[in-house]
Image (cartoon, one colour):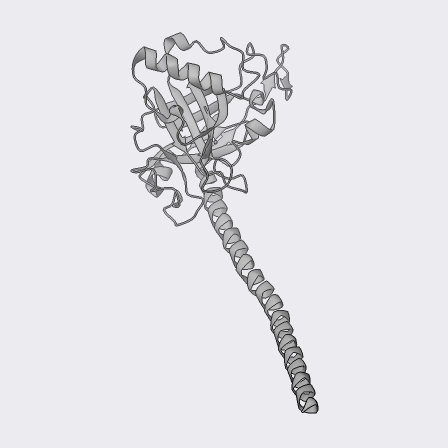
Length: 295
């Protein structure tokens, strides 16, 4: 009887060892399989993103033949050309670039074409489109192709004439720096804005030049997205955005706000996708906003 029990216990131990070996074998099989699947998934995502970026970059690069900007070198007191910037000194104005823009060609490509935005300090140079609902161009390029880079677009409440008290323009914060992906450099590189503190909007009826006076991070629930009315509303808005500003070198008094000049506000995502932070160069989600004043 004792031999039978010992034999049963031996069989039990062998069975347990066999089960453990099978379990270990399955685990050893699953780990490399899971790693392989992960590599395929992430590799596919990387390839998808790469192709999307490339497609968007290629499209906008082709549009550059219709948008030519020639920067003019500054001249010193003796009339000699110089490349040295004296951006911090407002007494010295910044040279006006020479724009050669084929507005008819851009309008033919997209009837929603509104203007060309050019930011010299960041090398941002894109056509701007009118948006019917602020989602139309989130994932559609200027040529109407599906792409997560989207386009630079006007707030749907904007009339397209840029004659409102405050006009909003939106664009994605792309990882490769395209679209409005470079706006964050104003926060990262102190003094960068002073190399050329202007934004240009080019339209068939003329060139609009805006002076940057504030930029900061905020959230989608910020008051900066609210409309304002009248002189008191305008003054309160200016007080709000200058109070929030990260632009430390801005010299108060450069812009005469008593005349209530027109404002331009750029907004892009800042931080993890789906978050509430925005960069306001007045920071997805928060927004990065830049606010500019027409001068």
